[in-house]
Length: 253
Image 1 (cartoon, rainbow, N blue to C red):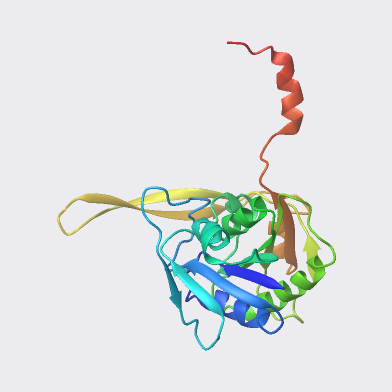
Image 2: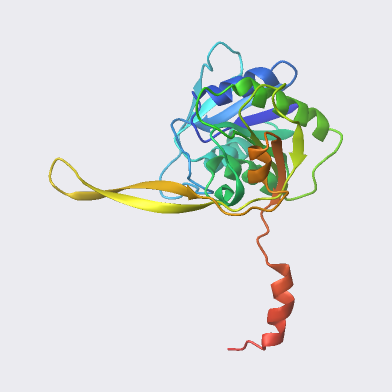
């Protein structure tokens, strides 16, 4: 079975290395990932510049790996349409350094790479560690490995991916895993004005999370309670209940 691994932290990030090494114990693994940090690029693709893919030696492994000067979504599209001889059975994006919870999935390069896989009809998973200091990526790698085994039997419906977030702690310290919904993540965005050496103004974005009440089954609450969050999401953003209401509005040219 073939698995394509990608990420948004860059091909030499620790998370993708730990994930690929674990999967390589059992499966045929391919890596196509950005050549540098590409976090928060969403589902952007490169249209006005050429894409360059360089075959590289991936650490101490024999895994076939390409470094791409594009976005996570570019990497998946390029892998499927140009680099790989055969379509993979799974696509796994990660393991991300930091959470991808709630509405943040709309910005996430990690989730968008998995979404690109779902668009191509491939079972896809996004995996993130929901903390940023002293990360034990092996916990995420082991869980992703188990999820692949599960999905070989319990297949996802079309147009769907799994967004997985793992809280800080050892396996023994975590409460288990829960199926969750997307919570709400809002930020108090602050643009700090600075000046470059020539005296020209520029702005640096930083964001502070605003805590809001979350649904009981939200991924955000799940992480707070020290459970692994597994959220099925899909790319059809249609508000179906409002469609029926708006049909009564008699909107015309």
